[in-house]
Length: 321
Image 1 (cartoon, rainbow, N blue to C red):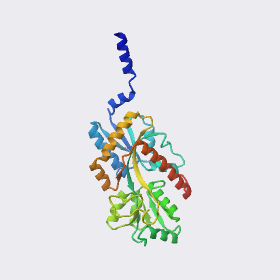
Image 2: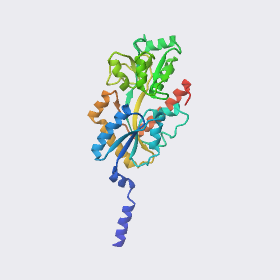
Image 3: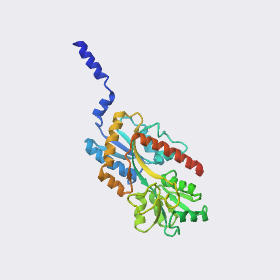
Image 4: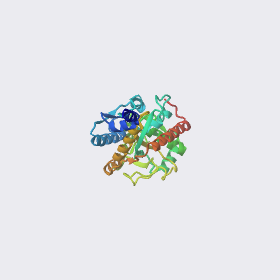
């Protein structure tokens, strides 16, 4: 009898830790760190997920905006957090761009994070001031070639998606334009509206209201496919620069070492939230395209994107800060 009890007790003691984690998680507040300011695409997606998961789990899920250092401040905070699923990162695509933009990044995107899912893709929208004579991408390239180094474009800062999207455009088109970096997209769009710069490629969320109001002219979206929220605007690839593709994307990560069962639960529940028809419609109205892919696909995408932007920065002669 005693031997039987000992065997049962031993079996209980050696049960996979995953089972214990699965039964317990979550049992306290979950924090989603957004390394950008409130109101942007990542913030919108994080708050949508936080609200839905909070209702599903019966636990509080909060969004914590930690801006600074090109999104590295908030990202590093998550890297240093306990790998227990209670501190997550809603990263923008700067995760893959920063190695090309900065000499020192305090973490390795593939080594120090555990991917959960790529949440969504948001096209950038290349726009020009109405005074610019180019009506489409082909005409923009011809214009830029006729004025090498004389056209100025706005970006939301060094190493951001709007910056690298324009550098990739210039590289592939064989043109030379001058970047005017701003602290965020807002001030850049304001100067574009005033005609202080010729063009800009901010996120669809920032740009489409001004295009629809007739204050700016859209040349094309940066993604490989047209945006469902603006199907009348062609892609840059189809309207003058074949093979061009760049986009802002957002994805959810946990610190490396987070238990597999916790990651599986997060992936299952978060993708369920993102794929809900009402959430797909909401993100679509803002120009977003839901992805909700596997952790493995997200890891591969981060690796591919990092290599791509390192190559673009090198070929464009960009100096890391």
